[in-house]
Image 1 (cartoon, rainbow, N blue to C red):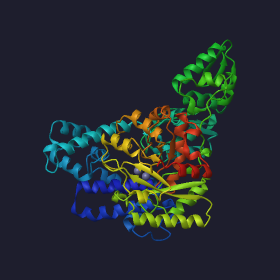
Image 2 (tube, rainbow, N blue to C red):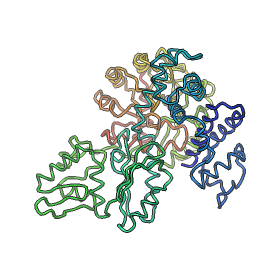
Image 3 (cartoon, helix red, strand yellow):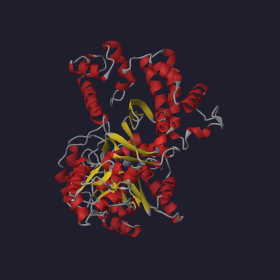
Image 4 (cartoon, rainbow, N blue to C red):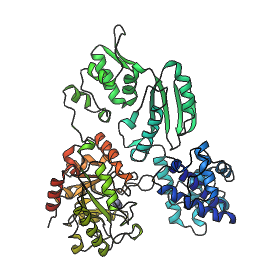
Length: 579
Ligand SMILES: [Zn+2]
Ligand SMILES: [Zn+2]
């Protein structure tokens, strides 16, 4: 996490310099931008490049100069960079927040500040509504409107965070807490544990001996993932995470840990239903355990399993605790069997260095093999997407040759030659038939003109015999683009008819199609691919989050086509060309 945090710090630095716009800041901006790039591309945590005393770098990292190195070392040793703290004071607080608005860079922020004295998002919104922004030179009604939309989106996502974005960070935080010497048990409850698509806050439960509580809380308050402490008591701490969420720590007794986990995991309706059931059985349930309601004697409290068992229920996994029919199903031992990570046999949407990926085909294959997959499809971008280094037919042919060569070396995983082919403005594909014919697999995606025209484009491209799956259909991106409002009924119906699958894209920016559209697609008989859309080997791990999200949406193994074994998948793509 150090690399990420540091990249963020240096980015903030450049923003401050750009907003101030001093002439002598110019070179600093350039060199900090370079440092950010280096940090983002390191394979190892920056700490590993420092000597044992963390006083200097073991060797030179080209591009990181003396000044930047000093700042990095200060951050590693103290958790902050004094110069940044100081330079933050040189501009009004709200300006940096304004930069979180999509399509708004430091230059414009500077302009609004110096010309209209706009110093925060609230004032900016007012200036737009008053028509002042559009009158500035270089601005206009359209660009003002764009900023306003950006503010709306920011507000929409600011409170809740998408699970795909925070999942691994929260796991790391949990690990850090669990490894504290006074912690007997620690876990995260709440909507995070139920794999909700977005998470509003983090509920952290910790069991620790009475006599160690004070010491633990002291250490906890100093853990480096916390940003700000809101409230602090003997058994509860409310704080904010650096990554931007509230976190509630509760200290509980070790032998009540299960009861507390059950209680704080929810959801509320599930707990109410459980309470009603307990009452009917002469018991009562709360965060301390399950009790006999007549004499208040404890029945069970240690584990959740014991609690569900004592209520004559099969164990209800957290992701099924949605407050619908899960209790009556658990009573009859009829809880649905849902997809597991081990069911996934391949990942069918990823990029290599041929287009905009960070790793080679071979590296992607190696990592996928470590994840026990039987196959992958490398789906680099098509020719029109020049910004992502899309492949010309010639380069597509080269990629096919390399794939063939790797496969002939028997590397222990099969690589299929695919492409993420752009759906053009008229609904046609971005390669000619003669090129498409040589591809094993086609993900058809929209990467331009994100508007209502997509409906017609999807309906048309579904008829294209070479298309296997439509990628990230609603085109939503967290924090920057809302899902397209299209007639999904119509699109799903046609996709099912033409055997074109729908992608569930679980890259950390997307989660698309979102969970609430899944039942509609299933109703029409659509099948899905769950893909990570990885642009690096690391991102392949996102499959875990994707599966978790599918669990809470109750998706079964047979609805996901990349649960096919290699033989089945091979057969599938041979037959899936609808000529
Ligand atoms: Zn894409
Ligand atoms: Zn992609």
